[in-house]
Length: 331
Image (cartoon, rainbow, N blue to C red; front, side, top):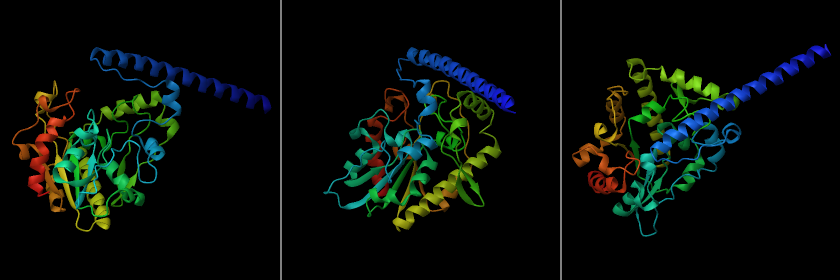
C-alpha cells in the first residue's frame, strides 16, 4: 500500500511539474509575441513575469477587487474634486476608462472639468476596464458612502457600447494584463448574484486561452445574447439606482452615452448591434435620464478629440461637452 501511495505521489508531482512547464512556456511565448506587436506601435508596456502572473493579483479582476477594495475605497480611484466654497449638491461619476480619464492628468478629466464648471463637488468612482457591474459592486458596500457627500443629488454614468460585451466576458480585456476572471453577475430568481472565481483555475494560462477561445465563439450579436446582456444591464442599472435612492431620496441618475464617429476613429471598424432595441426605452421608463454626446454637441466625436492612443477622450472632448451637459441638466 505504501509503495502504491509513493508511485501515485510521484506521478502527481510529475504531472504538476509538466503542467507548470507547459503553462510557463505558453505564457512566455505569448508574452514575447505581444511585446513585439506593441513595440511596432510604439507602445511600451511592462508585461508581468510568470511568477507575478500566477501567484499575485493584478488588473481589475474579482480577486483583485477583493484585495484592493477596502473600507469603501479603491487605490485607483481619482481623488475627489471638492472645495469648501461649493455649496450646491454633489455629483458621483461612474463608468470605465472614459469616465476615469485614461491618459489624462487630474485636471483634464471629465470629473475635474465638471466640478470646476458647475461649482459642485464631484466624486469620480470610475475605473479603467470596468463597467455597470462594478458600479453595482461598489454600491453594495455601506462603507462606500462614507466617502461621498451626504448632499449628493446627481449620478452620471458614462456609457460606451463595449461595456455590454464586458458583462458576461469571463476574461477581459486580455489574458495577460489581467490574471483572473472578470467581475460578473447573473440574474437568479430575479436577483443579482455575483459569480464566484476559482483562483487556481482562473490563473492557469492554458485554461484561460481555452476560455477565451470558447468566449470568442459566442455570437454577442445574436438575439439571445443581446436580450441576455441587455436584461442584465438594465437589472444592474435599476438595482444600483435603488441603492442610491436609499441614501439620496431625490437622486437623479443620468446615463451619458459617449458617441464616436467609429468609422473615423477605429480602423477597420465594422458596425454591429449588441444591444436589445428596448433597452434604453425601458431604462427611461424606470426613471433614468438617457442622453448622448452626439445630441448634446450636434456631432459625433472624431479622432481629433482623442488622447495619444487615438481612442480615449481628450481634455478637449470634455471641454466641449461639459458646458452643454451642465446647461441641459441645469447644473
